[in-house]
Image (cartoon, rainbow over all chains, first blue to last red):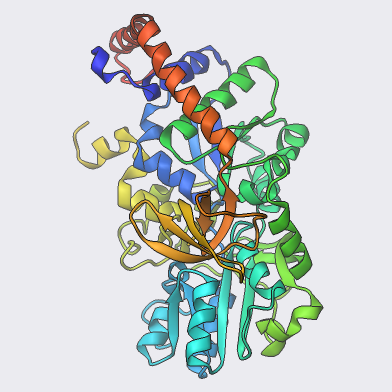
Length: 383
Length: 100
């Protein structure tokens, strides 16, 4: 080791190792709740830098992965019946409930191949511009967590949605799924949370106060540079060491304590909180958004008489053999799934976590073994 | 889709739209209805076509100051920190664990 190699990451890692060594008891399980954090962890090889008693686990941080098959089937049906469908690129390849190789289109991409009008957009704004230019009848598939919901709400509340266009609202909320996830880990509890940075720009750091208060878990709102994530881990370990679980906002350059109040107001004006379905998991109480009645003219559910999934009607919606539900909850690693990089690859995803660039399986597939040097060495037969 | 990208506001239009330029030179129209008093020159984070946050000038300045102080501190305490890292590395070798 020479002086030229010394950088800030070395120091943070040294601090992490020092604190970790002094911690007694079982392995410290730290969960991230954002696909971009998981991307940073894997892409930068952060897992390999962790001491043996610190385990980084990916939690439900990818809205595409949890969008129920039912809504994909719904937009495929609409597309095949002459309605133009606008979709984010992430959901274009997301499978519905049709099995692979069936005659029925499985994805919006399959529907487009059959002649349906499916347009990929970066934003709702782009979809609105396209619809104004081309007219006709269209539906926008609005997926995403609290970070994406304000773009839908702003367009709806500010009257930007043109005639002939409706929105299928499949927005989901992160605090309820965190509670759900904590309960699923009761036997081997999560001991640290890296809270989602960009969701926090909207909700504010205050949204996570309940985690240390109610669950006693140290929580850090973190940015997305490797050093942001490393610093967050150091903070979590320090809080565990001192036995004082708290909430730290490490991403102050973008996240305020109160969040973006204007965005919160827009979402509250536009939507109400409802029980909602999550792919592979079922109905989670008060975990989704639905348009308020006054906006029924742009609500695809109302306009097309679509079914919202209810608890009794919900059916397990992952393809046979797929372990995405466990991967989403951090109960299994992508490499634990027998289909990973065999039947299921980024170019031909079988399960939903392999579709979006933020899905844990896709991240692990593209950047290798979750960034675990030992796994890569084993895969290559070098051990 | 779910990716927050930092950029700089180059133009604010009256209809709630702001033009934001990113580091690779790409400019896009964004929905600026979620931020009060957005001005050209502001640094913002764009997510799925909407500005979700304005980066706080004060925080950016503090951040830049922290980094320069941190680097200055490294210069002063470099040897001490290197000793700490060396001792950790030696322990690893002694333990043959390859990990701490």
